[in-house]
Structures are given as structure tokens and as C-alpha cells.
Image (cartoon, rainbow, N blue to C red):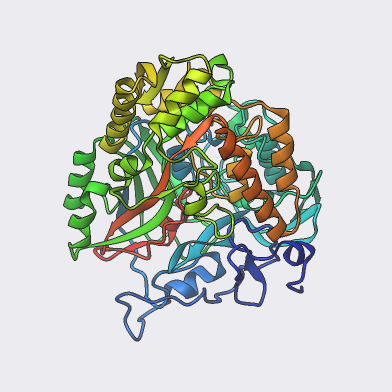
Length: 580
């Protein structure tokens, strides 16, 4: 069908370009992808061109591009993959509480289960730009969005669940998809029901079609359906009470075992619906919390993939055995003020706390001086964020001004500072610990706050952040895969509304932004709302964002990590090992 669907005409492309799949159908509409047309995954059509590092001029067998077709973007499209071997990926997360993806917004559970579950679509990316997202077929082979209140998906036929009780390898049906999305959007325990609240109804008119009807235009729903909000989980697994401890899906890998705080092991799914993948036989998701141990595992080959600590960037950049790729990422250290705490109702107190944090010192601690100041919406998204000069202006309270901070506290009736608690993680990297120490010492020395320091492991902190059950302040996690979601985190019930803000006026302002159909108008409205949020320091101080460095061994081929804050590791299915 034509590229001029309702949404593509009204919304346009986030980055001023569209990534077209072979066959002429629109694959992606920039970062939020509100306007997408159908794409076919059938046949052996090639993916968008990319440089093929180390590829031979004349492949001896099927190439990566011919095997994956439109289902994935390949870093080495013209290379013939090797089969076999075990791929290991090391996560720094210290613990994995459970495997039910609806009950956690933490990255590791979703990155883990994404190897066993499927979604309607999945997120890939341009080879040369990690933040240039592309939507690829998963269980849906094509889609249509010609009506702003309706999405129609054609579902892949012949897909089977993993042959594990109680699902026992039965065929996937459209009712499975309806069940999983309904569960994600309505179940009380689902952390993503707010993200999916625009869904009005789901229809299955025939065995190959799913229709999602919307209550109102929602530019975020399509990307949500491709993200970590709607893994297709079978009803039998949920009803049997096993979904917290087991993975049974239709994905490229079959769950084998979970040694808590150590490893989640998978083997390849021989019946995976993309024929010819995975290339590897086994996949291990390793949990190695200690940085030195993780680096040693990477250097010894125990793991082939790792996020490189900032302190080790130069070391691995200079080592010819590794590839290091930087990408702009929202810093995972954000100061939340509990909305229920009366001390923070006075905006002067919130403004004072922001003014008394030197962002340039934090830049050196957290980002080795390579960071930039963060607007309420990340600079990952072109056209959505305020300029650095504007954020540093006297209009806002992001600059460092201790004298003004003290004046504001005195005017608010707290001349001796704020007496409150500060919850922080005891299991984050050293740079996080150093920045917590800086805030504590700086505030104490200058009479800004008398802090009761409360340390907790990250899962405990994150649970309290999500439930807003901490006292006073919390330095917790932030970051989203779509620009509008950053604003939704200020709305009642937002997935990462770590302060528990429940302000009808803010809700109305956020709703007005996300309901704006025209892209440019929506971006302008988002920037104006960002200004209002910064003026009042609305219960959250997001200091910085900067580069994250993904590293991998050159023996691990075709690795294509998706944009930060998209919690999926689908790329593992399309990787092969040089020493397999």
C-alpha cells in the first residue's frame, strides 16, 4: 500500500528520514515510529546495506542478509555465518528477582526473557547510528496504520511455542497475542498498563489478523508493541503460576536453567520461525556484579560482550581484539523527591536542591567529562530537547549557585537546611558511589541538608522507587526508549514516575502534548512543557547524559546492540562466533 498512511502523513519521521524495507514498504518512522506501514518478512530479501567488516568477497554459502531477510539488520550482511558454539553476555546487574516481564521495569529481566519470547515487532537499528531505530517483523509479518485509531497486524503462520510443559510445542494463535497484550494492558500487577492505556479493544477477525482499536491517538503505542511492554506469553504459563521462574515462548532460544545471581542458560530453538537462525547453539546471560570480575571474564573470553566501564575505555579502545561502540545514554542516576513528603511541596526547596548540585563536578565523576546536561527529554531524540545554553540560563535552576540555594531555603523556612533521608544503591558502579558521596558531603558542608543515608541493593531500591515507598529522597534509575515517555514519567502512574507525582495539572499538560498529532507541534509542545517542569523542579533532578560504551570481542560477529533503554537482546539470535 502507499507510504502516505494517515499516521505517516500526520506524524512524519522522527529523524527526518524513513528506513524502507525491501519491497517498498515503510519499516520505521524515526525513533517513536508512530507512522508505520506494512512490511513483508517472507523470502530472502536483503536488509539495508552495511559495511561488512572482515567479509570475504565471495561468500561460500548463504549470507547473513539472505538468511535473515527483512527480519533483522546485519552488521556483516555479506558474510556467510558460522554455526555452533556458546555465546555469553555479562550483565552488571547484581540480581534477577523473577522472570515475569510485566512486574518489573528493570532492564535485565527483559533483556533476558527477550531471548525466549517474541513480540509483534522488534527493534533493530541502522548500523552506523545506534539511535536510528528500525522496526522489523517478529510475530507480525506486516502491519497497517491508515486510521489513527486502528492498527491491523498480519500474524505469521506456523509458529510454535517451545516444546516444554504445559504448553508442549502447540501452535501460536491470534488468541495468544490478544491474551498477552490484554494482560499487559489491564492486569493490576502490570507496570505497563499505563503505557498501554490507549488500547480500547483487540479483535481477531480471522486466524491471521489482530486488530487493535484505540481510545485516542497515541504516538507511543506502536513502539510499545515492539518494545518490552508486550512479550507474548502463553496463558498456560501464567495460569500455572510458573511465569516468575520459567520462560516458554516462541523466541529463538529455549530456556534451560536459572542459577540465581549467576546465569540464565538457553539453547537454540531448532523450530524458530526464521529459518537458519540462531547461529549459535547456546546462550548464557551472566550476572557479574563486581566490575573487576566482569572485566576479567571479558578479557579471558568467558564472556564475549560487556558494557565497558568508563574507567576502562582507553584500555579497550587500544586493544585490537575488541570493538568498542559509544552511544548517548540517559545517565542512570537521577534524584527523586517523594511527592508525598510535605517538605518538598514548596517549590523553593526543590529549586534549592537543584541549585546546590554542581553538574560539572558530576560530569567528571559520572561521565569522565564527556556528558551533557539533560533536559526532561533526552537529547537522544533530535528536535525534542532544550539547548545546553537554555538549560544553563538563569531562568532555570540547573546551574550551580549555592548562595541562591541558601536564600531559597531560608525563604521556605529552612535556614538550617532540609532534614531528610536519602536512599541510594549499594550495588552500583564506583562512579555512582562517588557521586552520592559528593552530594552528601557538599550538602552537609554547606548546610543544605542533613541526610540520613539509607543504602540498599539495587533491586530493593528499584522496588521502593517504583512503589514510592522510600522516605525523602532517592537516587534511582531513569531513561526511556521514546521521547514522549520521558514526559509520561511525570504523569500519575508513569512507568518511571519515581517520585510518585500525582498532579492533575501536570497530567493534563502531559496528555495534551502526547495527544498532538502533528510531529513538529508535538515536539514544540514537549519543549514548552519541559521549560515549565524545569522552572518548578518538579520532584526530579536529572543531571546528565553521556556516552555508554558497548564492547565485544572481534570473534563475536554481527553484533548490533539496540538503542539504550530498549530492553531487548534479539541481536544474539543473529550473531555467530569466529571460533565456533
